[in-house]
Image: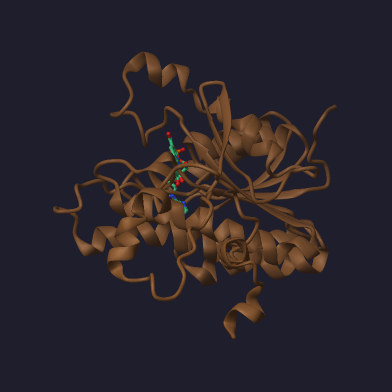
Length: 309
Ligand code: NAI
């Protein structure tokens, strides 16, 4: 089975270096026309450079097709123009990898509100803006593949990255609703949680680990998740040749009858309510209330309408 991207137009944000560059190179190698977006700033999001242009040159030298785009994902009008330009040049946009990112790490105690806002703006709003700008095109085409870039910090936490973690888990949440809204239009939306040795992590990894976690190892997961036969609503982790999935799950609700719902009653049942067992990964938010009603029915033997009365 070979997977190609012929006749597909792909946009990769933040593709001037690191992971995004590897996605762009491989998409182009496999036939996609690629918009290499990058503002070209430093790791904390300041300054500008021509990183995207250099990636385009590399793609063209290898016989591929690409254009550079220096827009910032934080500006919605620039995202709209990026989509419009790609459509004008190549007739559509089929794939969007939201990859652009910055870091402003500090413990929450020392983090300024500005650093919190900026990091959330680049990751969460930037991904929402780029996706929103492309959404109508995806619907019109009945084809769209969107990849959000989360992080282990978002899924599981990391000291010093409250701003980044909040934005990253937000992206997994955004994926879930866009997956539901896009399903009818053949728009598939997934979340990737990569681990890679890039400038973002260069002072975190020891030298040997930095090499083991070369960004090339994340490419298979990223490209599969934006391919024709991609799943939707997956959260996939990738790094150093290891690949896995993650889910948001809930346990079976404990249903307390009326008259037994005081704070003290809740505290009495906390061991069971907080137990890591009987886990399910709901397909949509509605399943939370559905599971609560099912738990009620198990205790009372009554369905929602008769139980209400
Ligand atoms: P990187 O710093 O090499 O790549 C991020 C790129 O985004 C940079 O080239 C930067 O210029 C660009 N960028 C920043 N702000 C932008 C904006 N407003 N508009 C357009 N482009 C902008 O870092 P890396 O590691 O390749 O990160 C890629 C993505 O993967 C990021 O979203 C990061 O948070 C995520 N990630 C990376 C991990 C890792 O281990 N390297 C771990 C978890 C997530």
